[in-house]
Amino acid sequence: MTSTYQMTKEDAVKGRKWHVVDATGVPLGRLATQVAHLLRGKHKPTFTPHVDCGDYVVVINASKVALKGNRLSQKKYFTHSGYIGGIKEVSAAELREKHPERMIRLAVKRMVKRGALGHQIIKKLKVYGGEEHPHSAQQPQTVTLH
Image (cartoon, rainbow, N blue to C red):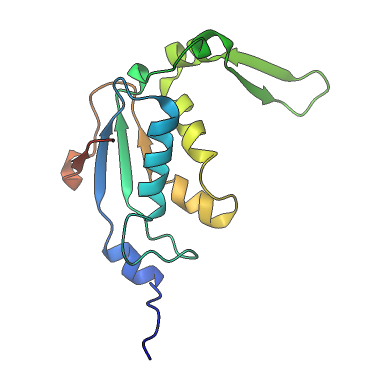
């Protein structure tokens, strides 16, 4: 009888890779699901649900992500200060213009598990609005989304 392989935290840290994803023209939801998949480590045969065994992901060109239909004007992002009447609303067009990284970070964050493990996983996501990123020393591999 063979036992199921359980990855340890130390093994996971050793096997981490870096991936670069270009968001130009890719729909936001499709981008977020595939980035969350890489961050979680589900693409690896050694995936273990209770260990952070995923890779680092660098998303470039966040300002060129695609939103279908009328989503650019109709999709709203809400924040609340905690005070009465403290709700703020920003459209997707405004958010993409001012802070394009936040749109992708929020979409991916909402697809990752909540809790301590999810907080660890989301820290490995690096999002940049333009083509430039400071992670070339890690020799990231380019990933094409399907």
